[in-house]
Amino acid sequence: IYNQKTGEFATSLGPVFANLLLADDINRAPATVHSALLEVMQERQVTIAGETHKVPSPFLVMATQNPIETEGTYPLPEAQVDRFMMKVLVDYPSEEEEFVIVQRVTGDPVAVTAIASTTQLAELQHECRKVYVDPSLVQYAVKLVGATRTPAKHGLADMAKYINFGASPRATIGLIEGAKAMAMLRGRSYALPEDVMDLVADVLRHRLVLSYEALADGLTADQIIHRIVQKIPKPDKPMAHHAGERNNA
Image (cartoon, rainbow, N blue to C red; front, side, top):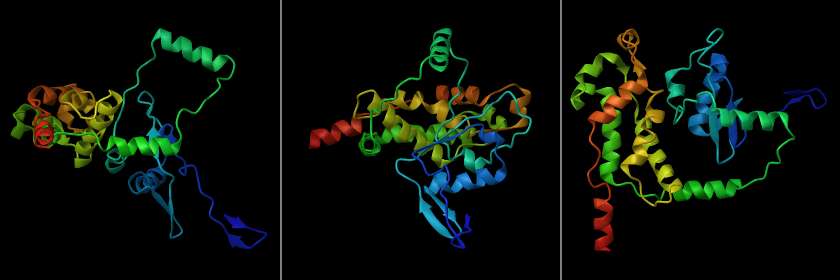
């Protein structure tokens, strides 16, 4: 920004410099905005006039899309979509939930009380990385994602014509990171197959590029993911390796 008093340009940091960035109706943002988000989502930094600025930590990007009205929207590039760890489908609220929403919006302002500091959140993230994931569970995640790329190799030859492009390694990383978080929220220091299975649709659905055959046959990404989960066997003993290490200790 040009300062008329000093005759100099000064950098004014924008809304991305926050711990939580909410990109509302992201598919209505132009391509230039999508391009700018790519760097900050992956590198946790923004380059302005050749100068690099780090965003605060922890840093989280959440975005919304309206699937009903598409006029005036811009499709997100696949590279940007892949940087979102999950895509969560939000349906209409239940009557009970809608009642609470109306009460909160039309009633007295709700007092907001902080329950954790950014330092505490960073500590929780650090602890989450310590959650044990057995190699067999990592291999399970690798096969789930691999089945989206080479369905025939995993006994799903009939699905091959429905998938133009499968999920990238970011999906596998997302499954394992998500499984660690689920295990921690469930009070465990180790992840189980159900932690992966409970997240697999959210992690994969936005990463599958379906073919025209899938659209013609009315197949959704979730239906294809369901077939993959049914086909890929879960680890029989996902804690065997961990138990062996503890016994040796």
